[in-house]
Length: 440
Image (cartoon, rainbow, N blue to C red):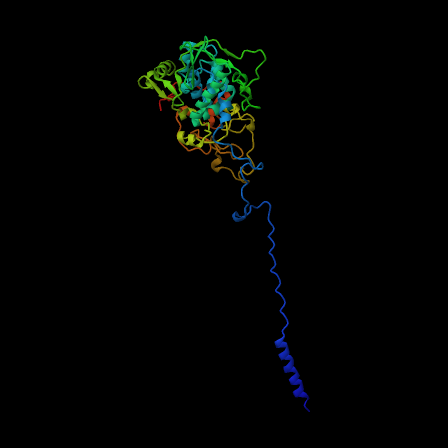
């Protein structure tokens, strides 16, 4: 039989046909997209997967406060005092760089209202404030304005230290507005002159200080803003009220500064300064400035007493801390509302329990039963301020004995408790303040 050969031939023929006409291979399956792993909302994303930071101006994350003031801000800062005579303006600018001493001096003046003239000068020998601050103790209304508007005072001082040229130019800009409006004139108390673009205001009596009072919202003509950064400094002008007036003249030798408009700076008259220093400094002539003539004001950071500088470059120059945080009047007086009245450097009230996690383990106690050393950290683990008075983030540097102040956390706990218990009294002590405008 020939069946087997036929079957073999059919098998070979079928294989040949299949080889010549193959079926198309099926398309490969698309790769499966990997699903992202579930994320834990409480776990931060890896560095490579973090979203970019929002652009400046994003309402969700407002931009950090600027380290400088705008032209509009400088106008509002200087407008309340731009029309003071040059010597008084210079004294205010110098003193504003020491905001905490301003508070201390005002507190002391309020407590000693009977001190006048020679008695006031003699009493000032026991105080260690910068001479620029002492110079305002004979002008209580000026000192009160600086004390009662501490935010403005600090901004004024920071603008003077960090943007001196712009600030002095803004003074001239505001004086020109008042002059054009017909509200800046010579009179019994002051003499107004022009030298080119410079407007000079002088007292008619060099031995007498006349403090002007005026409404910044009206005295500069059409100048104004929808709202002001320092509302108490800008009261509404009452209809029919006196636009520009003067207080009673005060015989006081505390105005030893002046304005150098050509250099956009403040200078010190050495002879006038030495006379004032001789009468108000226990060290007398030993702290006098050399020779006669004039010299530029030089800020003394020792009298800053831990208050931050707004501009980082200014802070670096004077060895302090930079930051936009300001010293409130409560903090300046050793009072912290967040701690129920205790200063930042004070111990917790008696009977307060330590924060969770700060107590020793069950059954354990300090070796030998010893009590914690004095000055231990307050409840909550807040760090104890350094004895040098530097704020957090500022370079560590030793401070002189003059650097204790009313600022919470800027001195030792014992000193803070002492100042708090004495209420509004000053911590003045003998020894006399060194430093001051122009010496260093």
